[in-house]
Length: 117
Length: 115
Image (cartoon, rainbow over all chains, first blue to last red; front, side):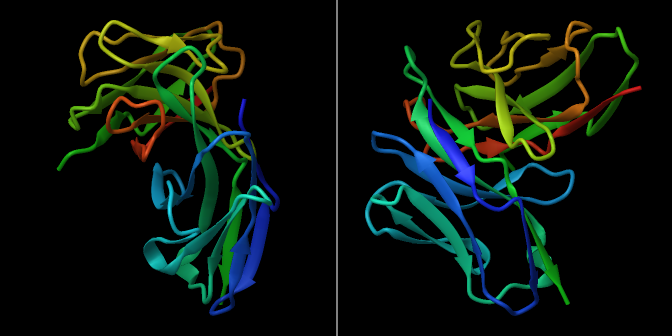
């Protein structure tokens, strides 16, 4: 089975500071990688995804992530955060379900980003 | 607008009762999934369905049941056998039927509390 490790459960940061949310995954095969954002009591919204091609992926709200195959990492970054970025962020990897033609997502435990004024 | 609708948003249940969470999609997707979210644990897969009248257990299916009688609907029943049902439940559906998600659309979730 795949596993996804988000290295920080909570990241506090001041407004306009840069931020990096770290994610490592375990996989011996090609994977698709995702970052989702969740605001309180809401569903998950896709921030960005890596499927193939350029290892630097740009997403919504000024976020970007870099896929590093040798380090099996997919860290999320933003050069200047806003208070509205306060939310929980989930890293996920897609993989095929064994014995099925379907795929599924494996999620990390989440990182709570809190932006202070 | 196309999307996934979960209802109700909040649900309270007495111990020993079964309760059903609704998930409806108008995206014309074949596959649908149920995830459970607990604080600090990320999302865990409960059940998934590839087509009508077909569904499979995920990682934590014990105490849950599902049905898939229509393409648009994938209700989840939390039974009295589920020992710790208080959680946030999310329904999801990816486009296409391939082995890898290129993206998954999520509903807004149902927060179930056992009182």
